[in-house]
Length: 113
Length: 109
Picture 1 (cartoon, rainbow over the protein chains, first blue to last red):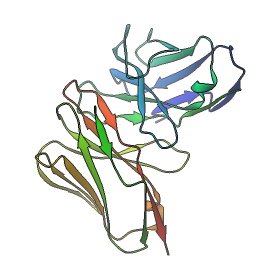
Picture 2 (picture 1 turned 90 degrees about the vertical axis):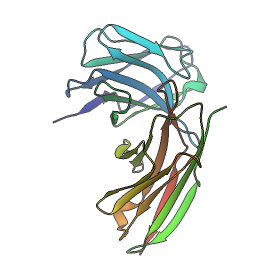
Picture 3 (picture 1 turned 180 degrees about the vertical axis):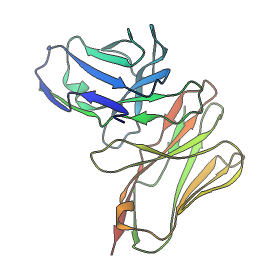
Picture 4 (picture 1 turned 30 degrees about the vertical axis):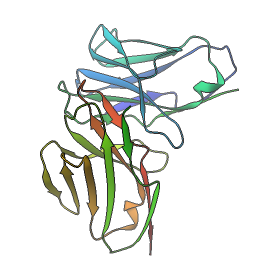
């Protein structure tokens, strides 16, 4: 059982480049989330989705876009990368319901030069 | 503003007991989660509290006092593999999860 799979695991970008982070879950979860984790700070929610075809902004959505065309996949896009977006990005999924525990992927370590 | 406070780092001895505290000031409260995160890995769910009191799960227990805005995670019979960061997160009135910065727990032999 793979759970939540993120690709790639590492990436280095130059300022202004674009890329897409992929997240796939095989648990048939309704809810999916994208977070960033920076040193000395708590996880911060970028965008989330409560079902296929729906997305919503989280705490820090600027500079990012997302899509959930299929229930099992949640994509995070950076249109024009900036050094401030250097971070570790985590995808998570959960069953429907706000008190359900979230299951996390192993993270993507992204550096923007 | 919303705030979750946890100690940055704690050290304990293998076989001992450690208590990791979490205090919160949030707009509303709909539950509190504890997660464990080993270095370089994904957070994993440990516990969920929504009512006052102690929830026990094997060597780990979690306590909640809503009136005091306070929770703790109690780890007993510490093992070296318990060396990790422990994240406290609160569901606010909008059902958004607010995360603490985490407590890095170092276990010494």
